[in-house]
Image (cartoon, one colour):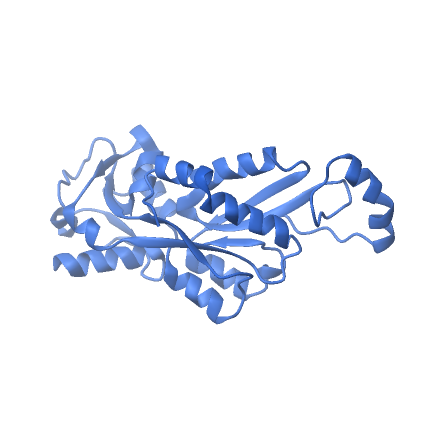
Length: 258
């Protein structure tokens, strides 16, 4: 995360003509003429928001988008503990963590849903444990899941309940990226991640669909952060995600419509 730079009022006054000449953004930090827009986003949005970050920077001279990726629950905790002084946008992998944010009145605008996602079984490419179904995850294998407080972990719990199964993971991770990392590195025989993570991992993993996944759909909301120094830019980034271009990027990565 890039901290905002503090620039004396006099310095900003002197730099204003220079920023204007460079086509500077609204509400810029000044200093070297650049502006940083800090976006807190769920780890499962790494690929798609990476593409949207590039698009936003290309259409906003002097603006750098700083993506802070992690488990939605961890990100909300950081925002509650004062990271909202730096953050401009928050995108959650579920409505529960967004509700926690709004309960603390940290949102800048009403959250809006922008995508949905479902779970898929993931194994190493050679599938050493021979996993074929959701029921196979209850067998003798090294299973890794997200922790229950993380959106992908809550979804895994609901899937297990819907199927009448009990999982016994060898570890519970704080983000879906960590689950995927343990599978791709060979530390786990299987895990539950989002469909979009399987697609993004490509040949590094084997994805296995299961019918119970349709019973648990995670909805992704996004909002600006209250008191953001870059309120106008933050709204523009949210609009990009909600607009046609953002939706095309998300759907190409496997996300469902909101």
